Image (cartoon, one colour):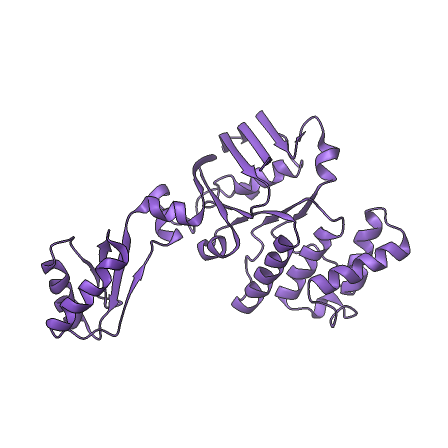
Length: 324
């Protein structure tokens, strides 16, 4: 599998803000990629660099064999970009928006109309095609924006925090659209601060912090770096949770952790599924009732916290890279 994006030593500074610092990574084709990081980590700067909107101060960036500095037009011909805000015209219909974008791509009138219809069908917007965009929901506007970025049939689609500010229903609509685009053969690189979004949409994840890549791999690989699976139970009250913790501690495997606020008790499970029946049997013999019990893997949130020392929704005083 050939490399879709190759970055070597990318460095970018905006005044006193170091946006990227010797960032090096390789992204293969054919795998939806999510780039994670807190505010100011360098995510948007990297996406803008791939889109040829800004140039690196130092380092090289190759997109599908083309250097973004020496061959920017070749790169632009193969990419689509959907920024953090939906760039659609509210006083036009959805169809008119898509036809306009197609004409800007140089398509003739008939071809532009056909392209607009194709995108409307792909984004499940046919019924709303001739309504003014100002009447669209947030999710519909975002899907229209994503569709506009597909008019030119890009080889690579760049999505910068595609679901920021959307409600859960609209977010799921965008997720479905991204899945459909990926299934159709479009390579996708997205940035996000939502760990569940990365887990849901990407088969490869890159974590950036302070302008550098600090981890890269599949969701499963990254989760395995945090540690063993966990047996987690939910007790009916705090007293029962404490009794359950005593039973788990008596197994002599590890010290269980408890969370009185949620009445949950967890135990590291290096034996994976083999430990779960042992725990259930011990609780049953001690006559300790639980509401539920399950074996789970570490979450991406736990991975991110372990690798960076903070969560994605970091201190609001952190400089935003968008402002750089």
